[in-house]
Length: 337
Image (cartoon, rainbow, N blue to C red; front, side, top):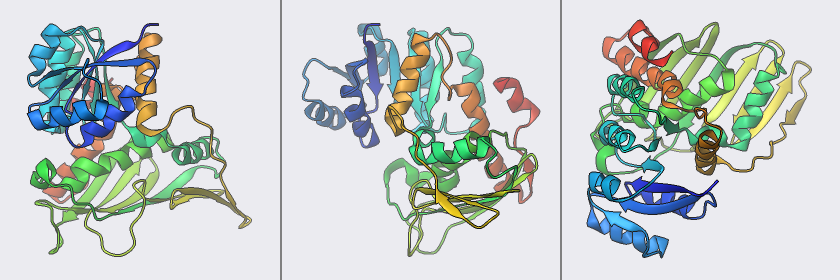
């Protein structure tokens, strides 16, 4: 199979780190970059050290003038929907950073509209593709600790981004917690049923919105206690967070990214990390390429990822209502069947 030609839209900030991954990926040829900011384009060209990569400030011009297989979208979520539709219209597969769109309602609309096209949309959920996460998932799915009955997920970091993130009303839930919510689905192999969430903005917070949130999430008969803070003080967790999943035969924990198993006899052992050809974001690209080769949908295609984004939508609704809410309602399940 020839190299897949890629246009990357959004090359500032986080987009620059994606360029590093793409330029070194054997089965990818980066043919064009797009950004509304000329400074971002110039910085990207310097980073690539490749003058043959075409540059545009208008994505439609790029789509018209450049033949490509994949559009990779690394832009603020408010822009995702229109960019994705335009790329599908131009005959390309779409690969996007999370979240799918700015709102869950927009994501449903995009999922429905995307069904008109032959090419798929994939969302990068790179936290799934880490050895420590796979170790936990494999242990849970093998039934080593029996049936999981409850769990704790704690995330604490103090991170200053600036830019568009400062304008979100529920920044932690909307921009970060989607990773952890998606990991819960991935690890447990179950879908969420309900959520009760609360949030707040500490007096010292540098975010415009709420940077601290807590939620009780039910996955059928499993109860998960989730807490996250992006404005923490003191010791921080890794980006994965600290995880404890308790079953009828033992407990699996992830502390400082080390997966541990403790069975009923009290013996604790470190779980063996699986060997992975690619990890993290590089695996996301690998999965995209493999799905295209095999003429199938990728694991985190838009319809599947809606189920993770639905937890975000449910959390926001719960915060607003001050009550427990159903996560997957009829209007959303119609779009994700």
